[in-house]
Image 1 (tube, rainbow, N blue to C red):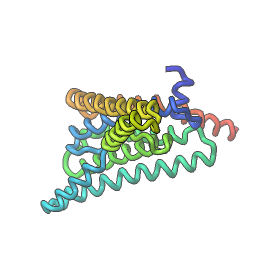
Image 2 (image 1 turned 45 degrees about the vertical axis):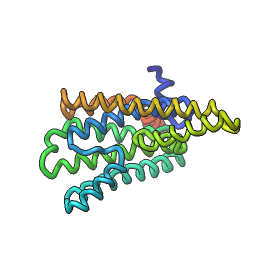
Image 3 (image 1 turned 120 degrees about the vertical axis):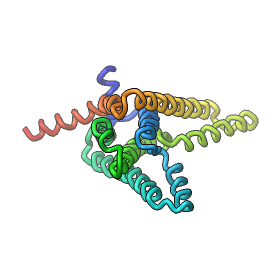
Image 4 (image 1 turned 180 degrees about the vertical axis):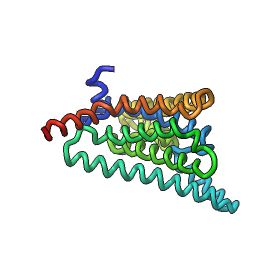
Length: 246
């Protein structure tokens, strides 16, 4: 990939095209991490609706430990989103290039830890740490794309995307009769969200196959993708800091 393209994907200066392309890559990574994570720790980590629903079921069944694991998952996802927001605002005040890239780089490092040490942590109580790690990384990622797209795009929230597609299709159908809807814009929304759902699905297939054949190390190629996407803006800030200190 050309360097200017990579820099534009996660750099401070944004474009609609860059937002869309970044969302494509992140939807694939989220789907792969979610599906692979399920095979690894028997717990979905990218959508909190299912986690909260399972907490309700386990509360009714009296499974206190599973309720606590669910609560830890939600808290980890929240913490990832919270810390991403704090960093983006902090970096924006300092005109840093990596305001969006650094949280992705952090997610990549977490996936490296998961890939290298997941097997030894997958039994006993240590598995909870893996679940928390994946939920935290998904919170980091979802907050990034949500912030840079002004909450238009989310890469781990398929329920919301399906809802938005339904709304857009409803507007298209009613707009053809009333003429008060920008049909081209709604069609563009349907195409974008449909592509994200498809990429999340394909990522899920890749993650499931990857874990089945290579185990926890399936996370390492995902980390490499994130490092490739985030590396240049982070490097730009490191070089700028070194020049300022010289």
